[in-house]
Length: 113
View 1 (cartoon, rainbow, N blue to C red):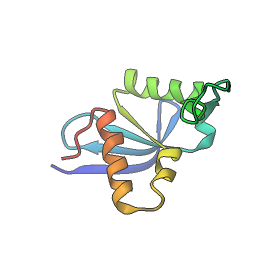
View 2 (cartoon, rainbow, N blue to C red; view 1 turned 30 degrees about the horizontal axis):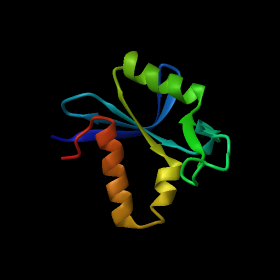
View 3 (cartoon, rainbow, N blue to C red; view 1 turned 135 degrees about the vertical axis):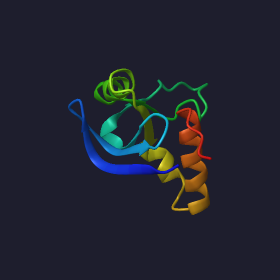
View 4 (cartoon, rainbow, N blue to C red; view 1 turned 90 degrees about the horizontal axis):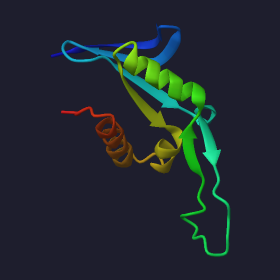
């Protein structure tokens, strides 16, 4: 087992926040994505729209999507994005934060065990 953790690593001209290099298996790039990494899509409001339907949708901007694609397709890294709005929703609760991070890893296809 074991792994090496590096911060602010240049991979092909893209700087990754955290690079995890395990003893076996693919490297993981962990990107802590704040508001500048997203565009907000706000659905048009109508009298029939519910509050949930009118909530803003966060989508990675073009530069961030290109970076994720490059890291995966060219560098062979598993990119993992930690979105600020999901982290903020945890309200500084350690149990919620742990659950949130495990879900982020699961969505990226990484087992945390």
